[in-house]
Length: 430
Ligand SMILES: [Zn+2]
Ligand SMILES: [Zn+2]
Image (tube, rainbow, N blue to C red; front, side, top):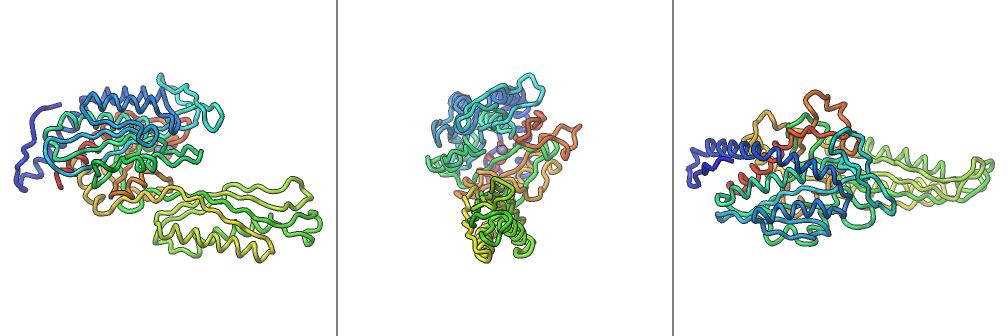
């Protein structure tokens, strides 16, 4: 890293030059530690840990932060780590977040550091893989930690680094990692006024950053519908109440909520009924049918409206048939909402810090992210970092969560640059 310092008391007319200088310095620093970041990523990739089991990963992050002089809190939200760096100049507080957990997926990528790990998941031993790229997020934030520590004296304010467990969902009734860390005070003492985070993605070319203001990723709720009828012989449906036909009507009617009842210009929305179970034999109409599905939206108002309409549609159709439908919505993560003023500013900042050509706008994504909880506490901005190798078509690249998910590692330094630049630039604008 170069040691030339940025002048602190410059007038506005010099801002552009200063920004470019900051960008150059961070770029050089990121290049200098690129091999380390990749080595961290490979080490973490080879030793993936499931949600709320990220003890090795958390220890790596905590040890690194301690060495760099951060104030470190461990066990925040079960296995989470918070590192606080107080800059040499007074100023505000900004938070950066990386998630740490891996998935119950068997790696099928032929790499020397491919995972052979197994772990306990819901009482079963399963293979584990960093199939969502959270290994990259941890390595990137460790790189950012090092760059910021090297510039500590000139940072006007405080940076909080959040290494978060359980983004994917432990599916055992415990809250998401972001919720658990917020409950344990990761957004207090010091309290940031903005939070930034990124996600590597197989849908975008290596090193390209993509984001949008407003809803970036969807809310995700689990839907359960139980339809109770009355069992009868399959040859004599009039002697009972058929929950199978009633369920079929409900499934079809639910599809009209998005297509016929919502303003499509307001937000994308999806209602999927993904499982249906009922009956044991061809000539018995069963007592009941159980269905499950998922609800996705990009707008909290529309989300609440959909819940109401599903309930109304299912119960009214069941009622017409003499059956009874019970609708349960398990509230999942909210919309990952990129605060528009912060994101307008942040998009410009990224263009200054990296290269305007490297930063692009993306369409809303129907996947979900528990970063959304952090962005409910303070304005947040989340963005994607493409990791598809230059010779692969992003449309053909195996998706995140695939056993073939692969990361083009030269992209990582752009993640390091983006978060480092955003943090310092944000504190400087305060
Ligand atoms: Zn994931
Ligand atoms: Zn993920």
